[in-house]
Structure formats: C-alpha cells, structure tokens
Length: 69
Image (cartoon, rainbow, N blue to C red):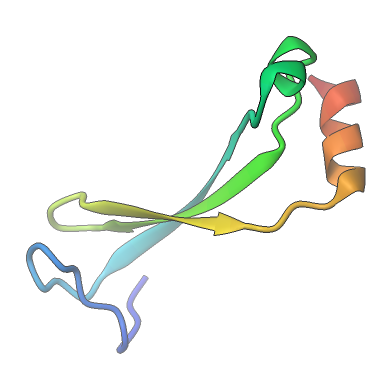
C-alpha cells in the first residue's frame, strides 16, 4: 500500500502494510480468552519497522469473541 502522508521513521520508505492484532486486557479476559484490546499495525515494507495504534472495541465484539474462541 502506498500513501503520500506516510514515511517510515527508520528508513523514510513510503510503502507500508496495515494489519490488525487483538490482545487480552486483564485477569478475567485471560481466563475466558476474551481479546478486549484491539490494535492496528502499520509496517514498513522495506525495513519491517512496525508501529501499533490502539483501536476501539465494542462490547458486542467482545461477547462474540467469548463464544467463537
């Protein structure tokens, strides 16, 4: 993917890949395997430098995670 506003802070490359990651947030979410935190990743295609940005999750998506894991 290429975007005119993005520039890698390590190598100044302008192409990147966007991904998504979910993580548990606390003791109870670990016990029930509920991923309550969602992050968007932006990775440089040249040097693989990656930044994570926290995204909002809804209660319904957390409930859905509980029953589909």
